[in-house]
Length: 251
Image (cartoon, rainbow, N blue to C red; front, side, top):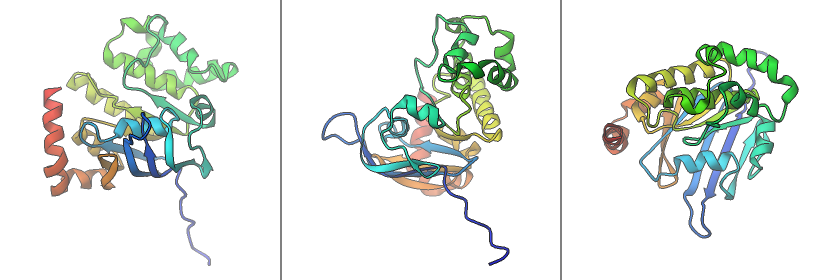
């Protein structure tokens, strides 16, 4: 029929995931997530809800026992991390996410070990996104502040020009000012067309900037919806945002 618009297919589709670290002990208990091209997805929930486990399962670091993950319609369930990087998935862990003895530029070079011939051209594009890093490219990453190291980790993950970027609590341990900078930078990266799936303890700020959000509890989907709508939902506020806000204040 003329005039019909074809439905947009999900870029990432994680369906009914059951996963865990130890045999017989599941952290994810039927978790589901969908991310469409260009979306910024936020994942919040109490400690132990399975948020970081979900990201690690998507990136092949935690064994998925049942359920499936697809990227652009292709099954990537339990694929090795290096293959996922080639396929178009970037991952920034919460800790130990830079090589402290290497310079900023050398860290970014490590991000291109699968495509070294493209290093120079890709580097120029990354400097445009992170001009402060460009000015200090020869500085050792270990001498940087927490927020600066986070920028290096994000920049390195972007070197391979991923379709989707997985961020595990990018604002953790940062001052309020650096947290704001990280959220602004995350949105800027998203606006370049990179789909982002972000786990965050700063639940309110996360829901303010994400297109859609998922609230996990005990490895299952408790709520999902548009970010700003979830931030105003009385049940989400009562059951999760209040507790999470206390956690944020104590952190």
